[in-house]
Image (cartoon, rainbow, N blue to C red):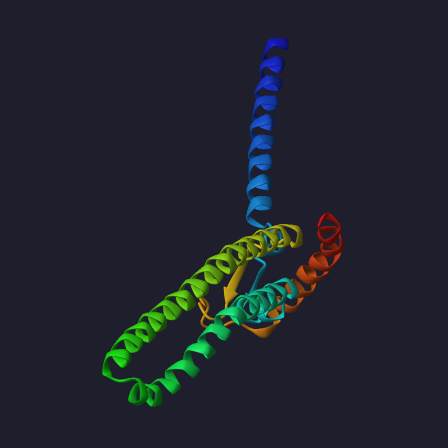
Length: 201
């Protein structure tokens, strides 16, 4: 009799543990199915108008002013030579009649050669300035990209798009525009770094 009761108890415990496992499994599946939508990570996006950024970024404006001044400074000497050449070329016609054909041919060839030399000097100067400013501008753009990447990580953005002259976005709501924030942060960073850079010089 005792063995029958014992067997019955064992079966009962076995059935109860099976039921318990089923209940636990069901409750887990219900919990996983009823996960609130809020737990899904929100994709935070924004965009920067790169053309506005480059117009209003102080370092970019300083760089433009630097090369404008450099161009004017290097161009002054060349401009003086060009003006002398223009005066000579203007008086050439009158002198040619007075000095004869042989002189006119020789002087004409000289003037032509000088015109070509001045043209080549102008072109060389423009290329030199373009290469110098191009290197510095590439470095600046690279710095801006790194800054935006760091800024995006710190602020929890999944994507920061670029719009402007080479726009990759055809439409975006104004509320996603963080151009002003980026310009302010970059200008503050540049402003705080400038005295240190000047001290090095």
